[in-house]
Image (cartoon, rainbow, N blue to C red; front, side, top):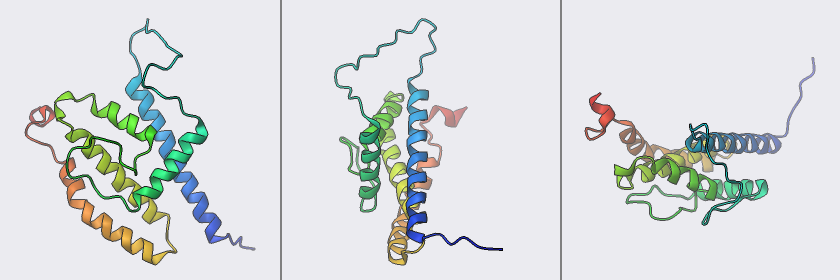
Length: 166
């Protein structure tokens, strides 16, 4: 039997591309799901509304890659998010704002929680994707450990949440 030895650098690139593709597909599915209209007679506009931007696939991928790189040094948001952090791509920002906008009484906390969850996920992906870089893994592991309490707290039901009482 012969074994096929793959180049570790090439394998790492393939993992990054696969992870990035998965994030893009999930974000697109989430955006579609959030923007679907249950009305049978829904009006469909092919022209972007004011303030909306159309993105090419290349722009989308470049934005995702830049946001992933920025996530390595990104810090969790402690206050209310008022503008797009560097570690959030333009596309992700639109999805997160749209989703957070569905809960009008959250006072911006929902968006901050979502942004911090996204940062955690990106740091975790980077940690998984760098098995041969022990220094990078240690730095990311420490950052992830420091973020865990806030991630766990964000999942706990809150008394003011109507779902908590049902």
